[in-house]
Length: 281
Image (cartoon, rainbow, N blue to C red; front, side, top):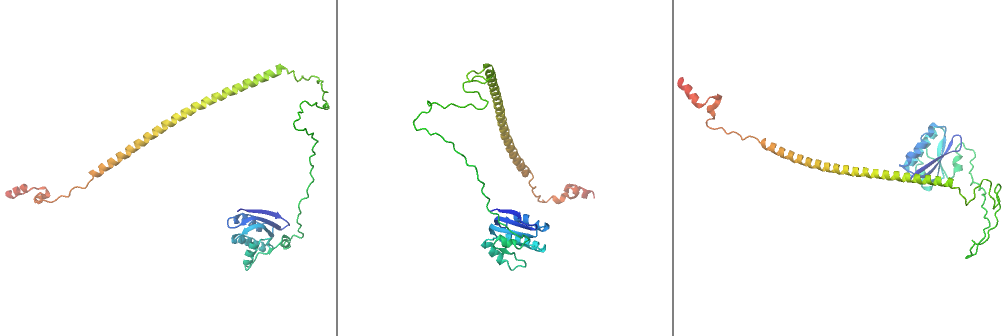
């Protein structure tokens, strides 16, 4: 549910804030946007008209209490008028605070605490008499009676109009229409309609060709996309094969087992060369 806020100045330093809807944690910022600038203005007294406030929780009442404290520091205050029983009970439960919010059952009693001397309740607007339409006498015709053959009463000419049966000077008889004025306009309208029709047909054929080219381009793009996907799959398969081959070649070497003749090859000298050197000595 939303919260509707209406500001009504009723005095030099008194402001009536009419609330309609629900005041809770979600709609508290809406009310705070109207009440927070008031301490910096010339308003000293704030009257909350809560007759149409259907719901109010602790968050909404806390916002009213903050505004009441700010107004008290200016020498004024905030009062609640015409509150519903749930809101009155909530206010009474918070009456133990340092600055409780006053609540009054009617708007005149709440405005007595402000700088307003006389509070007048505007009555309902006075209804303005309206001109009612006057129905003219309409002759009724019995059912089944044909009025086409009934003689019509003579019509009186209007001011500046020629009497019945006489034509005005320069007027063209109704049955005689000058052909030189009607035929050119008709032929012009026909030629213009034909031109518009031909233009529409040309535009239609152009759009058809463009649609055909667009369809062909789309088909080519889809085919190229399929080929790209196939090439990508081949590359992935080749990469897996190459990686498997590289992993197989990089296997660790077989450890060397020393033999009985390994000692004879130390320092790069074989056993036969060592015996030859001993014989020469």
